[in-house]
Length: 502
Length: 124
Image 1 (cartoon, helix red, strand yellow):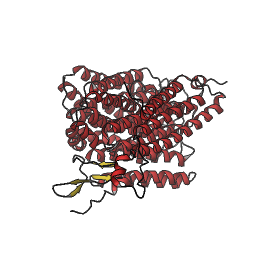
Image 2 (spheres, chains in turn yellow, green; image 1 turned 180 degrees about the horizontal axis):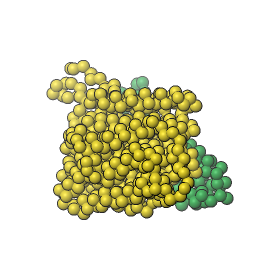
Image 3 (cartoon, one colour; image 1 turned 120 degrees about the horizontal axis):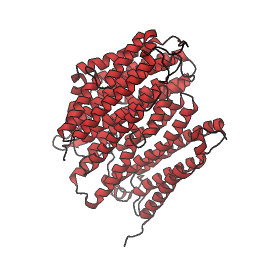
Image 4 (cartoon, chains in turn purple, red; image 1 turned 90 degrees about the horizontal axis):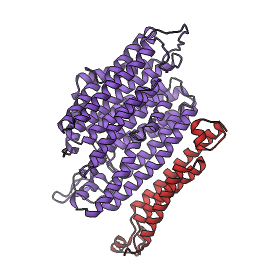
C-alpha cells in the first residue's frame, strides 16, 4: 500500500490567511499605517500563493478513496467511494479566478487605506472576509462548505456596505441581510434534500450516486432542491427579480468596496452556477429556467442603468446586467457557453474595477457623481479621463479590449445552439452599456463645466492611479491575447459541459 | 394510508415553522417582529435537518463502550445533519446579531421600528 497522500498545504492558506488578517486588523483597528502594511502584504502573499500553488485537493474529514486494484489512496473525485469528503479543489479555473480576485484585493485595500473610511480595522477585516468567502465558494467540492461560505459572504457584504456609514447603506444592508436569511435557509434545505436523497454531502459523490440510480418519483425532490439552489444563485449575483436589492448594495457602498463586492458576486455566480449545472444540468427544463433568469437580468439591468442620473448607480445596474451575461454562458452549459460565461466573469470584474476606481476618483474632486453636473474633469485630470474612456470601451465590448473577446464567444455559443434571440440580447446589452456609460462619462469628464463653480481637488492617492492603469493594461492585454485566460478555462468547461438539447 | 411517524411529524412541524417564518418576514411591519420571524424560519430549517437524521429506535451517534460496531452502524442516528444543525445555530445567531444591530442604528436615526417608515426614510 502506498503512503497516505498528504493534503495540499497551500489550499487552506488561501482561506486561513485572510481570516487571520481580518482578526489582526481588528485588533489594531486605529493604527492606520500598520493596517495598510499588513493588508497590502497579505494581499500580495495571497496573489503569489494563487499563482504558484500546485493543483490538487485538501480534505477536511474522512478518508480518501481506496483503489482496490492498486490498493492506493486517491483524491480523484471521479473515483467512486463512500466518503465524508469535505474537500477543496484547486485547479486551473480556481487559479485564474482567485489570482484575478487577489489582484483586485491588493488595489482595493491600498485604496481603502487612503482614508475614506473612519474605522479602518473592521472595514479592512470585512474586505478580507469577503475574499475568504469567495475563495471557499470557488474551491469547494462539498455542499456543507458551499452553504457556510454563502452565509458568511452574505453577512460580510452587509458589513462592507455598512462601512460607508450612511443611512442609505444601513437600509440597504438591512434589506440584503433579511433576504440573505431567506436564501441561506433555502440553501440549507437544498443541502438537506440532496443529503437525504443521496446520503452524500460531497458534490462529486452525490452526482455519481444520482447518475447511478433511477430516482423515479423521487426526482421531484431534486427539482425542489434545484428551486432552493436557484434562490441562492439569484441572491448571490443579484439576478432578477432581486436586482433592486443588490444594485442598492452596490450603489450604497464606497466604489472600491463595490469593486470587491462585484468580484465576489460574479465569481460566486460562476462557482454556484457550475455546481448547479453538475448536479441538476441533465434534468429537463433546468437550463431553460437558468437561461430565462439570465436574459431577464441582462435586459432589466441595462434598462435600469439607462434611466439613472448618477454614475454610481449607472455602474451598479450595469454590474447587475453584466452578471446576466456571465450566467447566460453558464446556463447554456455547452463548452463554448461555459468558456464564454467564465471568461466574461473574469473580464467583467477587471473592467468594472477600472470604472469603479474612476468613480472613486470623483470623491477626491468634490464627490459629485450625479450626471446632472458637468465637471469637465478630463481637462483637470487627463489620465483619469483617458482611463474612464478606455474602461467604457472595454465594458461595451469594443475591440481590442477584453470585453469584446468574451462577448464574441458568448454570441457564438448562443448561435451555435440555435438561440439567435439570446445572441441579439447580448448585442443589445453591449450597445446599451456604451450609451449608458458614455452619456455619464461625457457629462462628468468631457463636457466643460456650465457654472463657474470650481471643482475642489484633494490629492488623489497614488495607489488609485496605479490600480486604474494596471487594470486598463489588463483589459488590453487579455483583449489582444485572450488565450492567457481561455487556456485555463477550456479544460474545465470541457469536463463540465452538457450538450444543448433543443 | 400514510403512517404517522415521529419523523413525519417533525417534517410537518418544520414546514409550519418555515412558512410562518417566511410569512412573518414578508408581511409584518415591525423590524423586531421580522427578526423574530427569521429565528422561527431558522428553527424550522434546524428541525427539518434533525428530522432528516432521525432513525426509528435509534441511538445518539456516539460509540458507547460495550456496543458492537455493527449494532452502532445499524442503530445510530445520522451524524451529518447534527453537524449542519450546530452550524446553522451559529449562523442564525450571527445573522440575528447583525439584524438587531442594524435595527438599532435605524431606530436611532428614524425613531421608529416600522419597516415601511424606515425604508422610506420618514422620521417618526
